[in-house]
Image 1 (cartoon, one colour):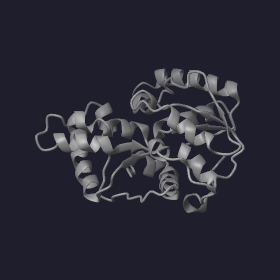
Image 2 (cartoon, rainbow, N blue to C red; image 1 turned 90 degrees about the vertical axis):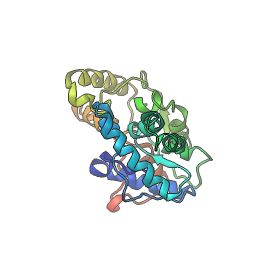
Image 3 (cartoon, one colour; image 1 turned 180 degrees about the horizontal axis):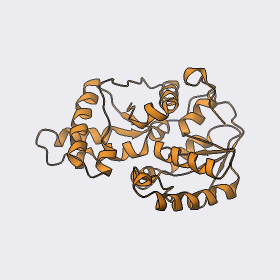
Length: 248
C-alpha cells in the first residue's frame, strides 16, 4: 500500500480506513516504511528528473515486498505510478522493471471490486454524491468501480451529479498556481452538488477532498466530504483512527 505524502500529513484517517477495509476483504496489507513520495507533484511541476528518482526508489522498495499488487488510494498518485513504465522507458536499468511495476498498480476501488465485498455491511442511510477525480476517471479510466462499492452499502442512496466528470479545480497543484481559475471551477462544481442536496460528498483523491471541503465551507453546507474507503469503514462499523468516529 502506498501511504503517500498528503494522506499522512492531512488525511491520515483515509490511510487507516484503507488498510482496515482491505484487510476485512482478505488482503494482507504491507506499507513499507522506506517508501517515498510517488513523484506526482514533482511531475506536475515539471521536475521530471526528481519524479524519476522517486520512481526508481519506490520500484525497488515495493519489489522487495514481493507483493502482487501495489494499492493506491490517491487518484493522482495512482495515475503517475501506472505511468512509471513510460517515465523510465529510456532508463536501461529500470525500463523493464518500471513497466512490470506499473502493471501491478491498482486503485483501491479496483482492488475492492475484484470480488464482491465481504459481509456484513451495515446500513449507511445517507444521500451520497460521488464526484469523479480527474486522475481517476480520465487518467486511469476508472468510473464504475467506486460507484459499485458505494452501491453495495445498505440504505445508501447514490446520487448522480451533473458534470461529475469535470474538474473540481484542485488538479494537483493547479489550485495553488491558478487560484482564480480553480475557484471558478469549484463554484461550477458546487452549484451542481448543491442542486442534488447530498448529505455526504465522496471522492477518491486527497486534493479533491480538500478542494471540495473548501467549497462546502464557502457555501455554508453541513455536508461531509470523505473518501469511498471511509464510507466503507463506516459500513463495516470499524473504529476510526485514534478512536474518532468517521464523520457523516
